Length: 573
Image (cartoon, rainbow, N blue to C red; front, side, top):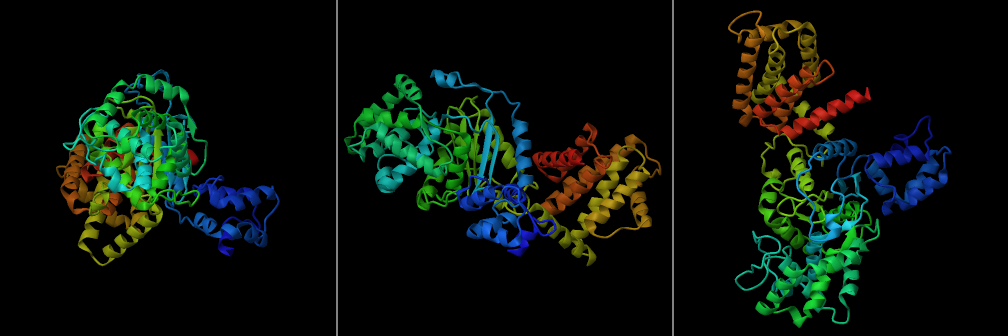
């Protein structure tokens, strides 16, 4: 307790603002129910000084969450850095104005196409909001996997799968195709979602479709931690029903070929299906719901078990294989995460055991998925180890970041291991050290003769990475050795420098299969520091760094994150 207190004190006292700021920098929100007592007590403190005894009394009832927050022990320890990285991706995607709004009903056609929002919630309740995350919109097909989960809870898998399959269809979402046994392919195509609605409706003969929809809305409310009101749009429902010709055809086809569960009324089944599509939520609410799925059915910000884990597993499996319409295969290949989209522009995505997130942008691609939403997902997994198969990389992810661990702590550990291994003559560690030096020197020589200030930068960078300085004499010998690659001339011109630089890239490309992510990071970081030693990044320097990253097999998205971090540090000076 004393250590927690001292982390927010000056001269032995603190105040409510400093405590709240420390909580906020960890990613936790002041509305988090797990911190309700602490937040209320801090509000009562005003601006008066808080000593240790008062601090202990304030945080005692919720000490475990406060301790994890203060000591960076939540799901994503470097939350502020991660937040900034997500902002970078958010801004990268914002200019994309491809696609167009769904236009089959007025409320979708007339939605503002410029809306763009991203919200994140981790399994520990760390939350992030960017852009239009508080705009209510109909969830449309995002309702489908949760209706499936609701049906699993009510009726069990055996009964449901008598009527609905779990196979990806590879067909448009409103296709009339069925499995050979006349079941719909899965709960995420319209036929499967309509049949799932029929299963739910058939189990409540005394309730009408609107009353059952309220039960589903209550489930969404619990999934999203009750952070906002789950709404229902009668306007959307009436428009959906008026244009539901294909869905009526699907319903009659289901009735004629397979038969409806318990002979449920066809119109009640369709009304429930359309009403669930007409539920309205915000992106922020959907992100918390996604985090509940990521957390095995337990809402991160309330601690309530909303869905059994077995139900969540089945739901995520269906989302993985069929959640993104007939583009689900490509999405799994490129993104590798369970997701579900809706034609109002929402995409709900789950990173199991870490976080959920949701995006909102009404412009859709040819498959009916949000253009910006899909682009955000692609950029995200290009930079972070979120793809379901990234853990098979064997240390070769392209240097993608893993926010589950502190990057600072990991980097210090890796450098310590490298320094120790070099000291004992380890072959691999020595190779990384040598390539690092070659890279720094050749980046400078590519512009012609190496300058005095560049020699200083190389020396400083080497000392910081390797933990010990190198002598000026030794460094000059190394530089002379690199010069000798330039036709043996002592004063290479720029053209010869570029030739040597090209040879360096060839060497890096040849060696990259033998380098793990840690080695690649060290080499790229050394080049980055030299290229940016003047305190700025010119386009020519970006080109060089991209070439080095490509040669090393490092994702360009990772390099862009490093450039964005460098620029943030410049602004903070």
